[in-house]
Length: 528
Image (cartoon, rainbow, N blue to C red; front, side):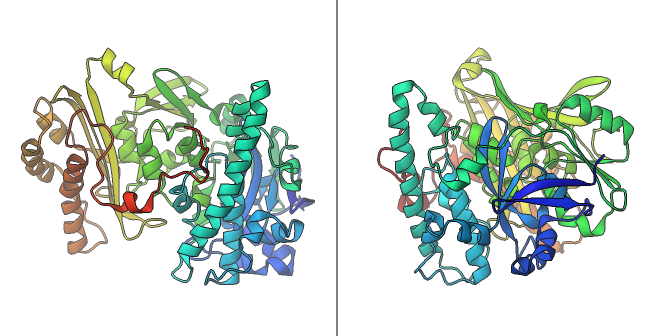
């Protein structure tokens, strides 16, 4: 093992030697240079310190905005980091920089730096094409002292110029049949100093690092190496994006860490006619980018999950392994009828998501096992017709104190497969009301075989009330009662957004989307 590694910091090679494996990038930067001193005052809930991470994801080069306080230093070996200061000094005329000049955003200099990184990432995002995505891009700006309309206006101008550039590059690439490389971001259409450096990055190799206190950090590159390390170091903590560990790193001391973010087999998303197989180390934003258009419920719930800098690091496998009883994503995985593939040196086993959580131990994962992937069926017209299903209604909801970066009161997801107007199969799931996410099978059985109409929903409400018990905890009686009300209210909301069996897309209950025009493109020539 070696006691040093390198990464690129603001365009220059940075050599790290014998630093603590638990040290975050934010803390490292605060000690590196006085201009980064404010990074020491990191708080993921109030004062996130955002930077740009450049890396190779599967076969795509990407810039991702991340919270430097939630990224462990050894994770950066062989990768690139750009700070807001570095972007500003390297290219003063960069569009992301110019957009922040001469405008009154009504926020502090620290928030302006965060805006600069978010604008920078958005400028290079190949999937950022519509007005409504600005909310997703800037949801990390959780403050009452920012002029949000002006931020949106400046961002729309920057992203429109990018989309026009991408459109023109695609027209040129059509001559050689390579236009798909433009729209997927596999081709460098910018040619500036940032992308030239980014596209020089190669696939990561295995990394074995030890600090002065003999704590070890391993980053295997394939499953064989991962399982071998798992056997040699049974006490090691498996991490992927590391966001959950980063939240609590000051309170724990782990002698051995094994990062799976560069394990090739765990970082792929495989699409077949019947399903998507999502590698356990695939970041949540990549999941949304690749399957969110066909499965909009995933995009919907992810926009309520933490903030974009956290979603850029958090993974679906890591989310499942933490077994959070309040997690927003679990009910939707129930409703989508997902399965979890677990792997050990003894082989694989396949578990429905409904059997994955265990009330005593959190999950069914045993020592020596890791989550390999999550399989989500593709519920399209063809696959449903093969089972004699005429339509499938599915949606998910979250009720919380605010839209992002908060523990939700209750999350719910519902799915109903219909034969004409009759419920053939039902999924009713919640999180936030017990130690683990749960399905309400009594209500599912009650509604199966009944017609899909308002009176059936009302008849099911007493069954829900009898079957669900809010676990007594630290919350007061009023909060527990409110959660119980949400169980029925969210179920009714699902029906009123999906009242017709043949209408899969939800009906809007307000005029918000009509006035906001969230689906409008930044550039008129945007293809479908």
